[in-house]
Amino acid sequence: ILAVGAPLEPLWASIIGYHGKRGVHIESTWGLVLEALTSLSPAIRAPIEHSHYTYHYTGPVADLAKEAGMLLSLAAVVFGTWLSGVAGPDERERRVAATMFGTLATVVALGTIFSPQYVIWVIALAAVALCDRDSSIRPAAWLVLPVALLTQFVYPLWYAWIIHPHPAGMTVISLRNGLLLVSGLLSLWLIWRTRTPSREAAPAVSKSISIPAAAGVPSAPRREKVKPRRAA
Image (tube, rainbow, N blue to C red; front, side):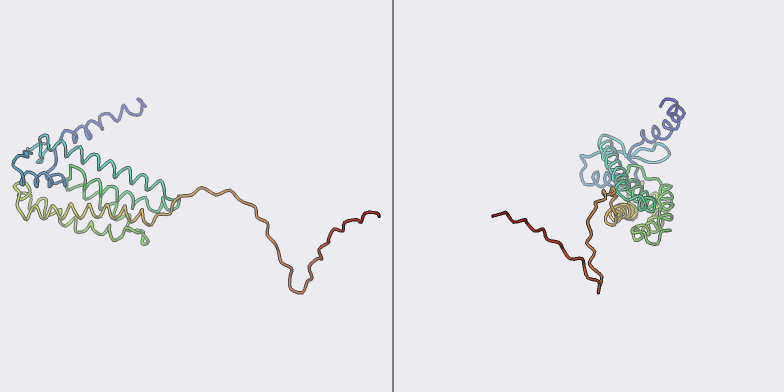
């Protein structure tokens, strides 16, 4: 384990360590939740700070949002993995892209970091899933098109209205994040509804088959056992 894990330690530190130190991204769904909470109640404080080349909500409330987002994202990964495991072998191979798309879209929508480039990952998996004309998630996968369009307004066009909350900016980011969440959850639900559970081969059971006599061919007469008579 050490031989394999040691070379990955710098990669883990640069990615997981880097993003773990970030607050709640203002473009994320949890950023919208914090914006709504701070607007409704002055007692709730989640200051916005510039760090890691972007803007984040910070403070104790933001830390709670990070934990909630991590738990929900982990639940989406576990469900997507389970969904792949319960499918039959042939179905699992055919739906791997669809399951990955649904899982990734849900994780991005429920995560506390939502950078614009994340949409590229989702679009790539949606394109692969749509190559299957019989895929059950086609209606959900097409939702990535309005998500991509709205992302252009979130960043860079109306980004100032996200940093300094404006009704137009909040509406666009709410629609973008909401559509992506619907796309992910709908995909997973469609895969679950149309799945074919994998079943182990049942043991063969031998059954006696009675073959009727062919037409015109008399069947063999049954012989009856005659009990011998006792002598008087």
